[in-house]
Amino acid sequence: MSNVETEQTESYCGTPADGERSVRVPHVDVLAPRDVPLGGPRAMKVRRTLPQRGRTLIGAWCFADHYGPDDVAVTGGMDVAPHPHTGLQTVSWLFSGEIEHRDSLGSHALVRPGELNLMTGGYGISHSEVSTAHTTLLHGVQLWVALPEQHRYAERDFQHYVPGPVRIAGAEVRVFLGSFAGDVSPVATFTPLLGAEIVLEPRAAVTFTVDPGFEHGLLVDHGPVRMADTLLRPAELGYTDPGNDTLTLTNESDDSARTVLLGGTPFGEQIVMWWNFIGRNHEEIVRAREDWQNASQRFGTVEGYDGDRLPAPVLPNAVIAPRGNPPRH
Ligand code: MN
Image (cartoon, rainbow, N blue to C red; front, top):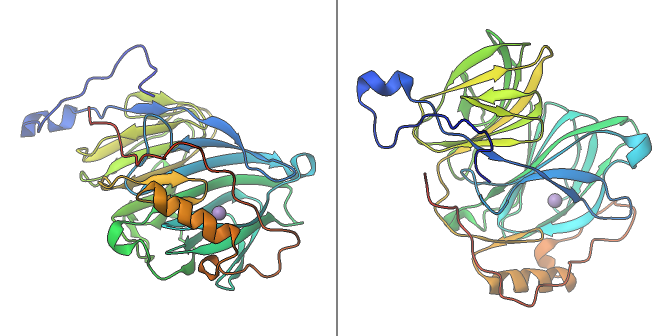
């Protein structure tokens, strides 16, 4: 997708001279969400903005699902049976509700609002995610991080971190990965990454310093919010190329606005994503699927989930081609 606004914003190509630096307005692509049923008998719906045809990755961020606020009494909440992952990390970040996480490392954790839960799949892991009985409204994001070639088979791991809120004029920020707004997450990443929740006060405009080597994605939960000159509606993901020193976010509503800012250095590797697997070629995906279907030790076993594990879907007939990102502007 490209910018849907009729009035295109001005953007400079190449390196601006010093005097022009302050007038450079980042170009923003608007990535629209599509509704995807999560699967399982109750099929809670999520709004997916990554991956999509126009963009595979933002830094190493390769998957972005946004859901809720769902009234669990109506939707049945989240009930994702044990399923495998390879070649990636999962990030759960909630705005409200509570999810019980179990994985084949033996981790058993409650995912709560404002708390990072980061699972590193490495060569293979499996997990289940179920909203708890305490949950009335379920609302949050599920994100994946692609592991770079040299760390694709990193040791599987589960980490929990609660960032303190950073209060600045017009905004409150929680930095769960990377460095932003004067705060640094202690959680290590395999590529340079940023993940932060930003809540903007009504009508506030805040200019943040950003890493010019990073590309950024702004997912709007509650808004609308203007990213540089481009208005983003709730559930849309705004994208900016590397090359920006600052990023101005403006809450265009009389309510507080909530966003999640993702960033990272361009990933630079082509990947194959299919179902819950990330590989580098079709054969790796075929092998991962076989290993899951054959209950190989690669993905281990999730203890304590009430029900069967998720079977892998049928592979497409065609060979799945690796994907990268479209060329820069
Ligand atoms: Mn998962």
